[in-house]
Length: 591
Image (tube, rainbow, N blue to C red; front, side, top):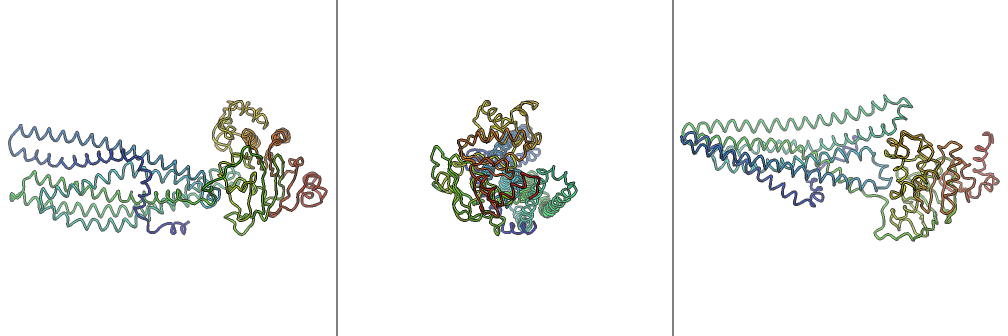
């Protein structure tokens, strides 16, 4: 992890915040209104010391009417400042929320469409961290830090100008302090930038570790792995804390140096100014006016030094978001995709396909695989674990592209079509059914969002799920919990089957679809699957050979190759690997 952090640091600049411009551009009008409110508040703030000088010098004039006018003017300026500040807060905060919402949507839209190869290189928890923690930093930047920074910058510039009008002599002395303040900001700011990026990376690693453990909390508890999981998370959290502590220390040192230098200078200049008042070189009101401007300038410098740290953190967060948005997906749709002819016949062809997973480039998951599934045919893929059966589905759904060979649907190479186009012609029942944290009805409707309640219930009946669903507390509308924790493994699988039935796609992919069912439910689902398979292409992956005995054809896989094919009876009679597996499953386990 430390090596990865080092690789991802170096030459990181606040200029990375320019990556936010595409998200800000659609809201130019809102940004301009916020800018006007910002300029108004800064201008009013700069006028206020003049009103104070008038009031102070008005005491010496002895005119009560003139003094009243000065107080009324000061009150009016305060009202303008309050209104402008409120408007600025509303507009800037609204702009920040809108932009961050767009960023989160853009990131999710990007990530949800990336192929599984992307998630081999990054943990889901880290992606979630970028969606939440990093965008929160950007929200703070746009909704607060930028506004405060610009306001303080305007006050800094305007304050210096007004200081020259108040007293060129004292203003010149103030400018001598500027290099002393700027140098530590620049030097320590570079260090703070790298520390901020490292801190964000450790936070993301912490989120990834926690997400992984919590998603598998039952396995963690079943294997009494709680202590190890706590230690692992605690170690990463402590490293995150240590990184944050270093960053905070650097920022604190920078703040101390800047504030000390600035206010030490003010004290010295005030001493010189007090001597000028004594000799009559300037009035008390002018000295107070200059002092207020000096305090405003000093406060602006101090605020800018703190905001610089926020800018550094936000720049690191922006870079991380840009990395995610700019991620190149190894599986891409063609520039001019060919449409899949309708109606879809469902002919599937694998032509000399060689494939290895990106994480295991030395191992061929599929090694020269060739077969054809005719429209309406049911083909079963069997073989030992790791033989390449489920990989066929990964390639057929184009989660990955083969290194050589091609896969076609109705004669068209999958790489020549838009993924969303040909995937609509497929329905998948995975080995580990995916259940979402919503109602049972919506989980089934996931297969076809526009389906009616009647169609959902018909699919559930066909998948032998209706009886247990109506027995739930709220029936089909029962909330099933995150990842379906309220359901048994067999119930989850039947909902997944109902989802595929509801999709009513020309190509049906069943990956160990009945592995978690009891004997009675398996028979019911088998009848439903056989009925469903009659008019569509069906590819079945199974270890339990009883579920594939009626397949039109069985392909036997071993070490990424097809080593045999035929019907159940033909393969049993052939005496090869399939016959051995059949004897193991259909007898007492003796050869």
